[in-house]
Image 1 (tube, one colour):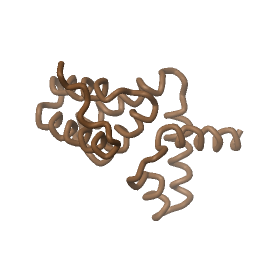
Image 2 (cartoon, one colour; image 1 turned 180 degrees about the vertical axis):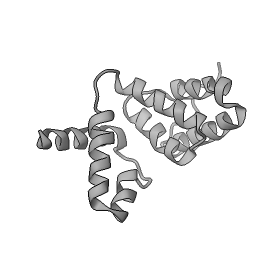
Image 3 (cartoon, one colour; image 1 turned 90 degrees about the horizontal axis):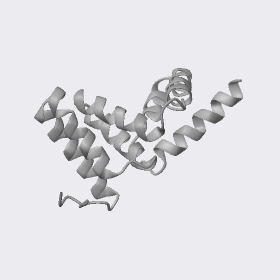
Image 4 (cartoon, helix red, strand yellow; image 1 turned 45 degrees about the vertical axis):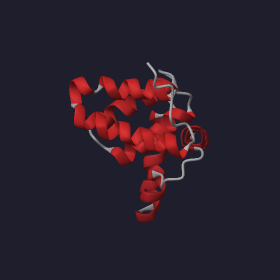
Length: 132
């Protein structure tokens, strides 16, 4: 069972965080406590994010919405990259961010959209089809 969880964690981390240039949370945690980093990674990535109850795209859009509402741009940046990696479109991500305005306010949306734009610029995906 432990080997299965480790493999599931590796597989999910590779799916979500491939080509992410920023420091990943696991690397930060590991710099302070290797054992705790492993435990957190196995739980968050290997158990929560690897669940198959909802598609990875849905899971990442939910995460983008929560991080937008909480106004956590550094973590949001990581999960925008993960959302793109699992197949979310820039337009879908922007729409989820706009939806949070109702609950989190326009300032949180503006921070999130700037974060999205920055990620898209770095990936060569900016500008997007913003003619709608």
